[in-house]
Image (cartoon, rainbow, N blue to C red):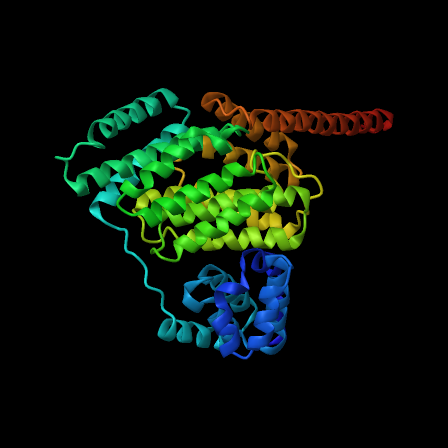
Length: 441
């Protein structure tokens, strides 16, 4: 393996060791002469953690194998296709000729092409559009209308769930609507950062309804990701990341779609919290790589859905570049370089280019990012205006978790703006004093 490819892979090493489990690719490890059967037996008998085993195996692969071999191992039985994509992404970036990357992609497409379920049906489009409508109601702060739609679906599901005269396909479609309602209800609790939501009865309802849905793999994936995003409110972040890994394994069985993109998005949210505790460049780059992978999941969605979620991801990327957490609060000790500032500015330009139809919550995050960006550009006056606009959005949508963060920004920028004005006034007074002493004036 080329040195630059190995170094690129080291930049996502934490992500690889967190998600990789050698037991799923043991035949490939033997076939590619990475480990002998005896070494495999010793590894199985070892009392080390999965992450420790993953570290040893991946380190050995990087020492003795080629890039195509590593990717083929990750793709064995479609076990870790998402990791293979990340490896291809980072190595493709540093490999100028990209010959080895192309070789890998060719080998993967010929030998290990995964079989995925095509979920893009007419019924799924109806359910997805309804879910998107509910999301926009939540993010617009229109909770009364949201509850009205929830009640409507609950009444329909209560009526048909045990009705044997209802067509199976029709019942499955209504179950999909009901599952979407439950997911959106949990999303409202997540926005509120409700610490008790990880064991909320709504999760039990989701589990009960999964077998009735039209695609249990898809709904199971969404359930696991939603629960993973909630469990971190009561347990260590690693518990949530572990659930996200299982959700991503589900995603390997379906074509790229909104639901798979949301798995990445929720995982990124957990990683932002991890970044708050440990502000390393590796975690930062991992998050940005996940954002790029997530963007590709929306390619085949309807234009409105694709635009909305793409906008959401660009905002998340801008926040990462600017060192902001999930509530718009500045992360202490987060490094923000000039390159980061330029990248954040480009992300915000991408958001502004699709401004029509942006919901209230995303407007709020946009203005928070613009405020911090303006501060980085030494414009506390503009930062103050943008932060006050963000507070208006937060108040209108009743986004209580973000209000304190925005208020802190406003107070900071008011002080900086006043200090800048005082400095400018002092310079003006000194200039007038000088002119007064000049007899020729």
